[in-house]
Amino acid sequence: MLAKIQGASLSSPDRSKLLPDASPQVIINTLRLPSGVGATCVLKTPFNSTLDQLAQTLNPSANNSKTLAARYFDSMCMDSFTQGVPLSNFVPPPPSPAPSDDPDPRFEDGLWNFTVAPPTTVHEPVTSPPTLPLSIHEPVRCTCSMQGTGFSCPSGVGGRPPLMKVVTGDILVDITGRNVSEYLLFTSDRLRLHRYGGLTVGNIQKSIPASFGRKIPPMVRKIAVRGAAQVLYNNKGYHSMPTYLNVLNNAILRANLPASKGNPAAYGITLTNHPMNRTSASLSLDYLLQGTDVVIAIFIIVAMSFVPASFVVFLVAEKSTKAKHLQFVSGCDPVIYWLANYIWDMLNYLVPATCCVIILFVFDLPAYTSPTNFPAVLSLFLLYGWSITPIMYPASFWFEVPSTAYVFLIVINLFIGITATVATFLLQLFEHDKDLKRVNSYLKSCFLIFPNYNLGHGLMEMAYNEYINEYYAKIGQFDKMKSPFEWDIVTRGLVAMTFEGFVGFLITILCQYNFLRKPLRVPVSCQPIDDDDVDVACERRRVLRGDADNDMLKIENLTKVYKSRKMGRILAVDRLCLGVRPGECFGLLGVNGAGKTTTFKMLTGDECTTGGEAFINGN
Image (tube, rainbow, N blue to C red):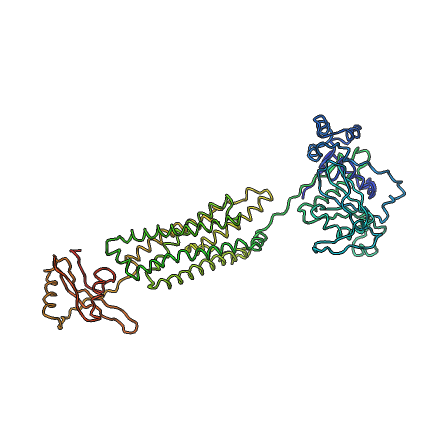
């Protein structure tokens, strides 16, 4: 809070030469000066004999009057004049001076009370406000209103208090002789948002209490203040307290100026109020109390967890029905197969993602739909689909039942998305703790591998940043406002999801080629097979000698062993040797469990071999 003297210069006189403090009536009379309330309108010079004539004839709507006003008044005052209304309408005549030894007859209880309304533009004479109770000479007849928001008083209770409108447009209501507490209480409902402060002067203590200064030096009793002034303010107005305190300070200044200083209206104190900066803790608490955007981000995570999990249902179904294997046998390249699925799934993903964005616009959430934040929201949704879709694909290799895969992936997406997002959000509220702040920093870096977290955390950080930007905009610190594309807000998650899309697709291709799963290989037994038929033994010798190298199909010592927890290793195919010449028809005959199906699965690539080799047309 800063204050400076405005107008003519004042010297600092010796305290021993100071005159006694001005009386309450003199202080109140300063509000009738052409300067009005405060220091918005002060005269340029304290010595001007034509001021009274100017006040009677000045009409701010005329150009020449504006020139005269600029000659006598400070430049700030021009904005306070009501256009088209003579200045004399706003300068009340001074009251008749009372004898110095006889107090004002209205000053019965030693108090002058004024409540001040904010400036208003009025083109007609000031009229009295609604009936305002309550006179101390009348019994209380006000009751609680039906709405429960204030008091209801009968018309005429307490009478109409005198009004005074000053040059700055402020309306002063004189409530001297009334019970101040009851008056403010009973009129609060009627004057809501129209009364922001008041002054009380004249509370004079005739003697110093005996208990005052008993344990402190005697000098303190000599400087005890006997005349007290009180400032009342409505804390609903952000600047009401310093504003009305400055009103009182200006009135005291002008009332105590000696006559040699000229017109007191040329002097004033200009106040600059700078609110204290809010701390990160208070901002975080406000954000937590809002709660709306936190819930919205969680709901978006829940909704978008079902979409990518549904893509795996069709992949598992194609795998279990061998439709996927049929495409590969027909010549479809695995990369083309997965790329086609990726493109189709992304097109399907855009439908629910667009619905989410439309819902955000319908409910008009500035944290997500403002021109500044919407590009970031759009980027989050697009890159979430880009990254989460290929990450879901490897799960199709591990499941045989589509519904099981669907439920499992939904649970994983929900657990990771909600738990990681809420955990980092709650830890962010305790940044004053260094240990928790360090843990939160590590968790934020670790959770970047999950697209669910990047989506939810990005939405929360964006809303959090929006609240802080709104606060900085209100106090005029625009240089501290941050873009949602700052690295720590959204960009870090966007970069992570961009790489996750490529990595997820690469892992899917590697799984398709069994790169990440090492096949079981067992050495082929060298012991002769004694129970072969003669034809089987001849075919084996032909293949092993190399006579079947030019055959369309050559199978050499093909072996398949299954592993079972209960039965251990199960030999399904034992060193099968076979060659099929061009033009021959080929078929396998045998009892159940002889290995016919397993052999064809290995030949078509549906099952990996445990041992041996198979060549089709030399490949």
